[in-house]
Length: 268
Image (cartoon, rainbow, N blue to C red; front, side, top):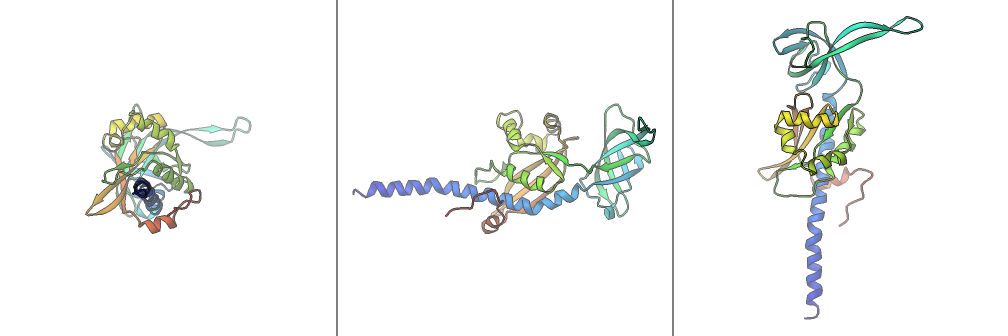
């Protein structure tokens, strides 16, 4: 009888520890899965420059096709070159002023050109043939929402945005807003992940707060007993989803192999 309380304490300790271990393992699997997906986001934002070759209503056609890396969901700045500016001492031309007319969101790609939806800047003229388009060579400024968990596991996934941010920063194509700062906005109720994902006006409004080009929204969902990571890119310009990728979570053993150097190992 005297040993019963000790046994109960050990059982209670095991029950309390089990959810934490499971939660940590799930976060690791999400991070490892995104590591495998990240190249698709990097490829979608490779620097590129081209020209508008035609305009039809709210559609623009650009001379960037599949062969030059065009992808459905890419968002290009549309600009018009203005007057030259010169060196104040030598008088030599250094470049031209540029007026941003809006953005072209690619929705159909052909071998030598792409069709895009034009999103205008208020007060600027409509685009015309020979206006320029580009994806900048500079880093793309993005924010990552907290994970939207649609599974029944209800694990602690608070560190996942930090893991995703690390992967994106290492690609040298993205500048990621501090996930802690972003998380505070969602924790306080100022914004909800569902709003960023489904309500364009709300997504644009919260984007202005951080001055980002887009949002990365990670979602966990289950289909026929399989847990998937679905990651969607939301435009900060229009608030619409431009593209998304979905992958089944890697096994726990694979997640352990892909742990980040700054993370401690998993203890049994």
